[in-house]
Amino acid sequence: MTDALFDPASLRQHWPAPANPRPVVTFGAGSIVGDAHFPAWKKSGIPIAGLYDPDREKAEKLAREWNVTAFETPEEAAAVEGALFDLATPPARHADVLRGLPNGAPVLIQKPMGGDLGEATDILAVCREKELVAAVNFQLRFAPMMLALSDAIEKGLLGEIVDFDVWLALDTPWHLWAFLRDLPRVEIAMHSIHYLDAIRHMLGDPKGVHAKTIGHPNHDMAQTRTSAILDYGDRVRCQLSVNHDHPFGRRHQACEFRVCGTKGAAYLQLGVNLDYPHGEPDILEVFPAGGSEWVQVPLEGTWFPDAFVGRMANLQRFVSGEDDRLIGSAEDAWNTMALVEAAYRSSAAPATPLEQRP
Ligand SMILES: NC(=O)c1ccc[n+]([C@@H]2O[C@H](COP(=O)([O-])OP(=O)(O)OC[C@H]3O[C@@H](n4cnc5c(N)ncnc54)[C@H](O)[C@@H]3O)[C@@H](O)[C@H]2O)c1
Image (cartoon, rainbow, N blue to C red):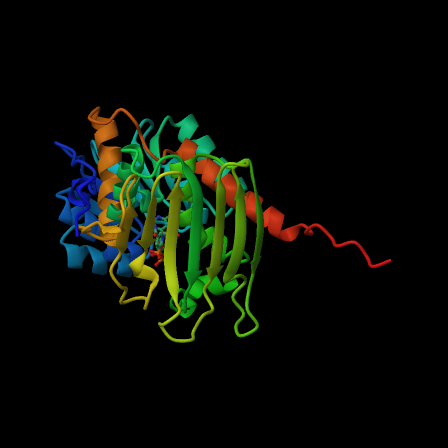
């Protein structure tokens, strides 16, 4: 079903590959490395020099599985000539790991950029002091569906974006991430942060945010439900309705973006979060300017691991001079952390009270 006005297959879905990628040295041997980092680096031909994790057993097991070196010390890992450093460490460890890297080194830092805005500010200070070429792994921006959406917007297929709606009703298996149980900040800091970062990428920084984030009586996770309104003034409405406590069958579950412009619109399904961890396909449909029906964009690839491929490609290409813009730099990512911080502040503050009946 191709609308005569545009060829959906022509939308860009992949970031160009670097010609001569630097070898990657990864810090951390946790689940995300085996699930997404190494599959992405292998898939895209990025050489993996090795990894370091203070948990030797974990490091050696993962190194054996991927046939890479397990460095014995962080110093040995940091000494790899011409490397790009890939941090898959807990957020609170990022700043210390960065301090041990050579000045001027390229580095990809896993999200979130620290546990809160204070830690993000420390990380930014280290990056500046050491003149690191640092990007943060807010990789949703590079998912094939999101690159295609950005391309559709750049091509004017939607007109001026005036509405961005994020709608989730999921049964998220939080028990899979035991470490989240003790954290004071969960839903926005760990999950919706991806959507906030992607929205900033498309719409820029909002003037402010109204938010409420809460848990659920059926469990003790700090927060699993969020409502937020991002204030972009009077032309753009932007809101997130996020409910991870919807265990009432697949029928009315959802993980969707509805993006409307003055002339056209887009609908996205972010499949990975549905029926997690099996996932469902991502979906992108566009109702193009001047068109008369929704057109499905045939997607080549998914958020995990293809978005990691694009994220790494842009950093590699920026370092080599093939790209002139580093997307999601540490400087830019700090603003996503500031938006998260503002959302928690808003949630803790009282809402506008109602007048008392006279
Ligand atoms: N981008 C995404 O979508 C995404 C998804 C999952 C996790 N993450 C992030 O990735 C990071 C790792 O997550 P995970 O699920 O793999 O966690 P994990 O707990 O499974 O693994 C973290 C590993 O880091 C190691 N570590 C601690 N200090 C270290 C140091 N100084 N140097 C090297 N290694 C060190 C630990 O020993 C552990 O093995 C976190 O920051 C998390 O927020 C991002």
